[in-house]
Length: 103
Length: 209
Image (cartoon, rainbow over all chains, first blue to last red; front, side, top):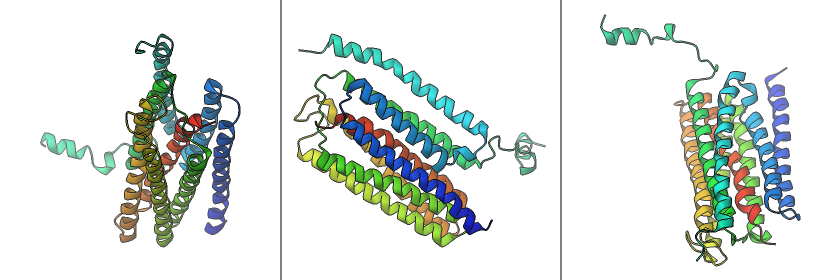
């Protein structure tokens, strides 16, 4: 396979990913104007954003082509830290329901 | 041999341990920066969610026109600039120096356009009375969180525009190589990735109905 063919061939995959990411952005806008609200809408939006981010990391940033141990070193640690941040929600709901600052 | 001499001998290329990830150290540094920055943005978005959740009068000011249309255009420009950055990386890998520089500057142009649209969005909101700690619609924290998150992202875009310009000019002059183009493309894709979370969390969850 010539260099030109190889370059065009791999670019095709990236253009497909580019179109998918744009389509998912459009889907988010459709979701925003549907009836779902609150936690349900948040979960749908986050699910779409995570798919977009996964595509960008694997195909635009080429993490898929790197060694497995690099993926293992980066991804679980990041997810762990982001999951640990979820402990703030109980306090946030406390503020909402007990409303300690209401005058 | 002195301690310094022994230390230097231990760091000669022949005795260096191979990279465990089979990537250049500067690429590893960029990956480590990216995950730390991802956590920073994560913390900002969690803080935003905390304040929004705890505020019963959180405003929903973003109308379809002009705000959401503007966001759609900004998203299109930023995602397209990621594609042009991929083309720059590909050209750099194929030793097509002119192509790599050209595509990098197309990316830079996309970044500048994105930043101008963003500043225009800010100008519109400020004209409507949104300030850091007050706005006409509800919770006064709306402005602080909105400007902090979008401002941090905008800072990254402006930083990326400057870095890509410096790297492209350096690559053209032979100071930097194709690895540097590829490494800074990682940063640019990350800026794009962060925007994919900022749009739904900050704009689309607050659309005016």
